[in-house]
Image (cartoon, rainbow, N blue to C red; front, top):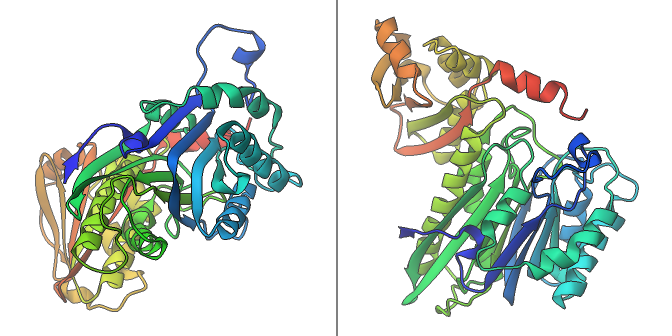
Length: 415
């Protein structure tokens, strides 16, 4: 497996673009300033029809684009050719939401000469505000005309809200004697919590793979990547992951379990895990990427539950912001995790580029240097290493510290 450039445009046959169309007017817009604006409308297009898999938010309140996308995939038996996505407005909890989400599909379909049902639609931004469709109507020609094999960065910036950096990753690998590629882009900085799928994530591949195995791969990898990510404990209404496979690599189609399927899953994991880490590191107001690795577990689910419990702990996140080796908060979060294990066998270490400090052995604290611990915690990437010493399974979860800036960002997010 090899890391490559190109994001969602890395796989053969995919093009993308992103533009500023003015979905949410700002004071700068009203002053007709010549200052460049952030892209707010993105498009992904495949030359060939794609087999498509998707996973959606578990929130009972679902954005109109999710409802429309699910209907579209049902109508086409999971066949798609494009994704249209906007930022700055979630198009959620609106009486005309589904109408406008489908209108976005129609606008893209007309210019691309495809069926509206072959278009995935997604939105992100403020909930409960009416989506103005006119800017999208006015911008669709420029969006489509600007499609390019190098348009991945323009599309990746179009989905950003409070994100401070674009998030892309791509790899290539061999399956069935052919070079195949997977590329992805993601957005998300706040309102992110496990159990599905956390944020908007779009993944493309030129691998030939059946719909059943594509969905199986996505479900398996979401469980150990995006669903192990927590920024603030809130699960968004618009979370979605889509995975489009156009088969242009011309490998022998993957239709069942075997070496090629496992290779595909490993490549998909590499893309989704690295995007997950980027999302965690760019959490709203964050100063530190936190990674919790739980080993020695009796089963995989227990490992996931415990790692997620620690990463999701508000008190633990605050302690790491303050660079305070308050390991009791780690043990507390382990203790209320919904899993069966013997706490008296648990070991905990905290690690960074500056070293490792042992804070707990056999469920009890051990003496350590506070100065050494403070140095370790001064890094912007911290690992919490938990060993249950009760089995052979392991899992990781990712998050960030909780800072003053998180409150500032969300205190006036809408206004």
